[in-house]
Picture 1 (cartoon, rainbow, N blue to C red):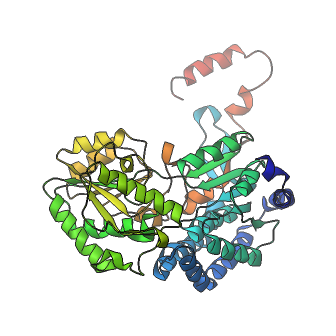
Picture 2: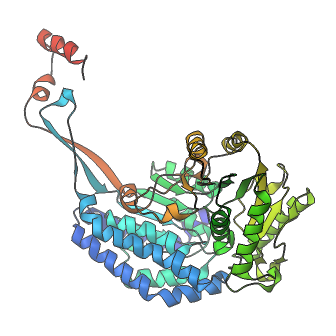
Picture 3: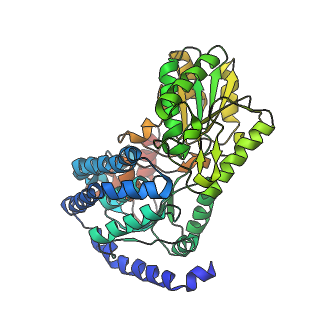
Length: 475
């Protein structure tokens, strides 16, 4: 930590942080038109960089160009478009009806910029998970310093070039580097920190923020469960689950982490999954399809291989895939059957293309399993039974949920996206992101009426006490 503080790099971002103070004060009175103009410049640059993103994504971990455009570029453009259309209404103060005790006053909520914000983004969807929070921060009128992950260096370098082209440093700045840069930034008294990453590092961020009483938004992860019951449309479930699990080689915080399948449809569901995998990536998993991303580096590939080896050593059986090429950071999509409860894969977030298939007979046992683990970032349920759907949603807790689909709740800009407890805190997306980067300031203006007479220095007169006792019955 001390090395980061004393380094020249730390001095440079500390200087930028200090220069952003005056800008943050000025932006408190920035108009919707000014913020929208910045968002339009960002949108144009992100689109213009599409080829750059595709090349950088391929260089970093063989991310297919189609995935880059769909999962990296499109969400940012959608987020900008939504903010441009609705920012004026988001910025308007929200009038609040007075309570009976404060009749005669005018009240409203004023949305103010938090000030100087820090965005620490991950490597798995660098463009998306850096610029979508940036859109919300700009819409809310803040200055921003960005620290992208060093594990996707080509994408981080491209983002740095874009930020320098579009923004001045006293408004938005990006600093590349290793963990020491993040440590140094966390020592500064930001007004808000938006972090996306693992629960383990999220705790570090939260502890650092506590030293300055800085507010935080933590987009974390966890073991997101999937349930396929006896009434489910198996073709649809297999298509969705295989897409959600195999996109980005499973390196997605809301990817299905394990699947509970009703015993009566388990074999049919696995057969449908095989069909989906063969159609998407070919019949030979050793062929290393160009449409399937690689694990980000050999260290993470070795970690996932260790989970696979441990599960098989404890009695699990690979139903598909089971091909690993560490030198190429390649792990084939692998469905695992018979995974015991004590296997490491059942306790660690996989973040890779391995998917345990578990069997159940009674829905209550699945609910008990989910409730016995930390609250996940997402939960997916495939069912045509309304009672089962209502039961699962009522008796479990997760950051978000999808019924008869997976992942798409993240793409729904009118819904809050975020975790709960171990999977995170705070929300992103659309208006929710704007509010995350805003301070909701409550304002009361006294004009006339009871409130002007009640609150005066000195002894409370008897008539007022009598009136208050009557009011207490109905306020």
